[in-house]
Image 1 (cartoon, rainbow, N blue to C red):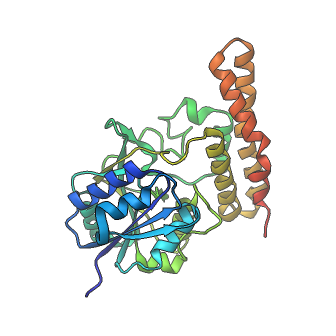
Image 2: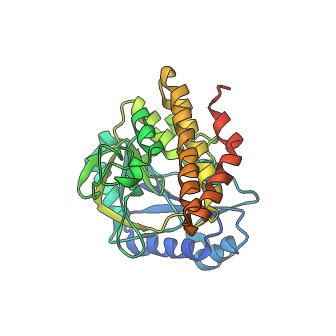
Length: 315
């Protein structure tokens, strides 16, 4: 049997109903010959059993006995992939209007990009801008610490990582394609060694794309390939999510900032949770009840700074 053009990889964790809906949409909307590998990260919600019952041998199910995380889970699944292209697809997504076929067609028209992505919407049909973004820099970290990137989300000056107010329409070269809907040649994936396992969750696709860019690859996105991405379905605790996000951003500074900027970058990153804690403390003192809860969350993040602040140190 000849190898398929495409291997679709879905890594799931306690998202049973969303995962089933995602897989149904893949089969419903995709005409390209593909193999579908699902790695379940030791879910305790019956995900593996439900996938096996509904899809049988149409899906290659890898039921892990431990939670490997997103990066290592994709790496494990990719080891058995046979497709010329790999598509990483989050379990909390829904494929719309032949989006996978459209993305593969786009890749074949723009082979120099090496990595390709589409546009994402929230469940209500509004834009989810997290389909792509720009790399982290000292300037972006300064604006983040000052709160300007949040206050002026639609500004390309103050929110450079979020690419300002771009509505994700059309075709554009980008620094980073989100791992929720990321197409890459298997050959390039293997050249890069896949994701770095040190990224448990968050940051792994940024690291992958930046390493690819160092080889001359220029990732691109197209709005012709649009999916729903609900976002955050397997991550419930906001403080825990922020700790993991900060750890990922610290590692990105470690791996991708010039030597002269690493010290400043890590300390500017620390100012983000510190400034938020201070601001919400002031607002809480003025009687803002919502800020009292936010202050507790940021305090929890700061209490766990040992999990992320120190990981910039060299091995």
